[in-house]
Length: 370
Image 1 (cartoon, one colour):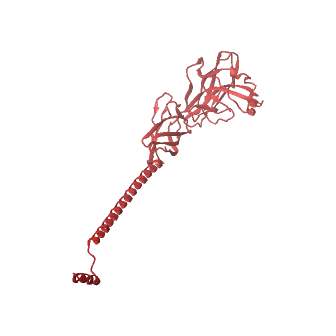
Image 2 (image 1 turned 30 degrees about the vertical axis):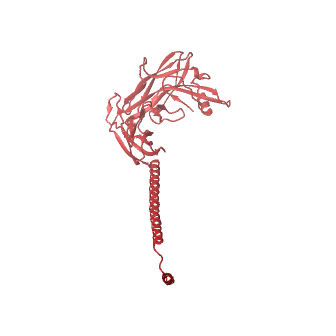
Image 3 (image 1 turned 90 degrees about the vertical axis):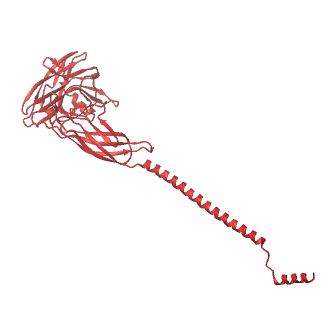
């Protein structure tokens, strides 16, 4: 693994043992087992020394060349020979500038830079190095990025006892704009959405929107924007994140989470970009904002379950009320029948029994006997 750091500071990174052997074999580069004791910086400079620039920006015609300078300052207590290199540059997903590792082949602006292979700098001293940028005749108009670095090589022993090479690099960015028609442009692709619901029906969920922003023009573009979902929105990059710069042909993936989104089955979403580009004098180049619509399926399962529970309770209450009413009606009917039966029994008890023929004869006999 190699780490390539651009700026001030002390850097140490590990390479594979096989690659380390090749690196250490270079006789013109300092090799030491105490690379962590070496501290240095590399900055753009004038012929007389550092000039306050942090990057080199140059505008050249195809087929032309120009000279510039950089300063290597050795902050260590001993003389050091630094290896000098140039390579194609790029921005990482985190938005930080980097350059291709030593084992990767450059095909663009990294091949346009010519300079010495090494520079030796005394203890606590500074050396100014000239480099020449030559733009090919067939170079396309627009921005081309490269990096220039000064590095030291060393060896160390890993836990298994093997010799491991260490390359430490410090450098800066060189951006060459080839003259011609400059057309900054971006587009949005690969949009996907998802919804993370809250099982608490009284709390909203969160929407996730993922997408790629592609630089389809020929100039470096800075990208800021906002993602909306339902009534919520989120800006990107966040205030604590680095500026998002895209070189021509670059693509950057973003994943934005928007909170406080209620599941309304169909949630409208939108991606709004405000890209910007400038000339080397800092003047803005006109770029129109870009908006892309999306949709999020958000089934309100907790809310539906809550409504189902409420509906079941209401049905149970209505059913119980109907059963109570039927029982009440049945009780009234039973009471009415019981009352009618009691009334009939009393009426039968007060009515005289009908007289039979034998009863009449007995009555007549009693009447004759006096």
